[in-house]
Image (cartoon, rainbow over all chains, first blue to last red; front, top):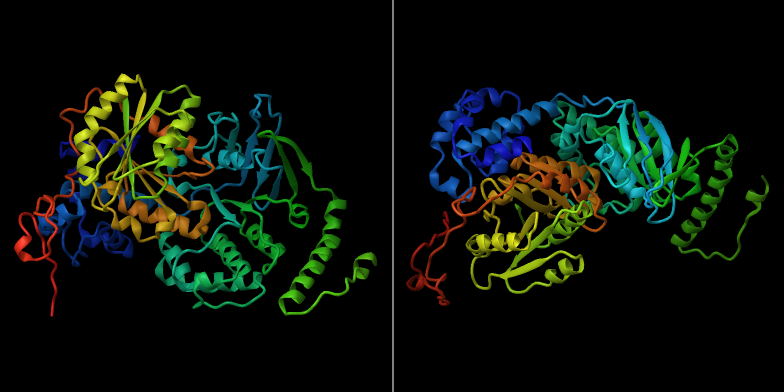
Length: 357
Length: 229
């Protein structure tokens, strides 16, 4: 409990002197909206340009601070701490992850999990197994960078090494971004506002934001069957469009080097392209799926049972060749979906194209 | 004994988080117990009991729940000690955003959920801003972007806190939160300890049971809204 514990409770005002009071707000504001964001989040008025922090604090009314529940001296500590975080964030993704290694621990019955798997940048690895077989726990172990300190006793190595423990609670070092079918947009924003907001929290410089919006919208549209625009409300997007936007956004705006996918719906989105996009952004992809077309796109599959990786199956050349006919099957199903949707009837089923192979 | 105060807006998932964290602690043979404070009625004690966690309930009725909490916390602490607990959790609903339930030198947790929207962190006062640990729930059903932006806004509102994501349904993240909360300091006694910030105040005629509307019936600590022409 390093930073969190020391400061808020300390009765002495000793901590506030160094970091904060020497800061002039003019310097702080040199760049940006982010310091403004801090005052906004605190519910405080915007400081006028050129004012010193000391002066700013001095002019804040006691009653306002009491209303907001803010302690004047403590505010300086909070600001200094906030600026530290922002510096880390601004330094960009310093976490260059080229590989993740999962070193086996034990299963639910305490029997050893005799597996070590290494997954590299740009690789897709699938996770299969029945409900309750330990898929979520495996993903949680990776996210937590387990060091034998979880129920599975697994060890996770980053670039072949034991990762720094402080990353565990650092927002700036989040290893894993998630994409699942259960995810929804809940914000009342347009596509562009949505991307802008995400870019802002990533401290993307203002002049580059418009290009991000364009890039992400275009890429998402390339994945989705039906076109949407920058001013479409995110809540009005179809399932496929939503997933496409989430994937493109994750590809371009998430710092997390690992992307965890829990199935991708089989309609309204080009799944092969979606995975290609993430691979091209050098993500490490872990995908929990039981869809054969998706599963065979991975280089290997981790088979989970009783809370442990039971075996690792490497996708064979034959399996890769089987993707094409499986995809045809898929497309056939989709074509019937499409017919239903447009009000047609399905009186006959034509399997000849499949048989022809 | 160690004490952890857990607060957060209604329905943010406090009980689910505590149960999952307690389960993880119980696996490590740490003795845990809960005091649940609510307003009118609660069923959560049944959930705790079912999970094998000793529980006491306190209902604030028509009193400000925050004030009720602080006037009773010492007795709760003594109850926890009498049960031989290692860690006592105090769960209290933050019914107003100006709630200030955290105590100096006592681990303070705020639970908020991702469905509240990205502007929520700035709307919550000392309950969030002065917490040691902020636990975000319901993150699994919003987009990764919204999850990231929400966490960023929490960071803005409370730069010092550890921010952890816990899924109240599957328990994912609870193990990790438990590691953090286990690091709470030993508390010998609460007597003489101080709140991190003063609680919301009111001492007006309505506090004392007044029900009529009108200037004539308003006495004491009353504040008026400003309407500009």
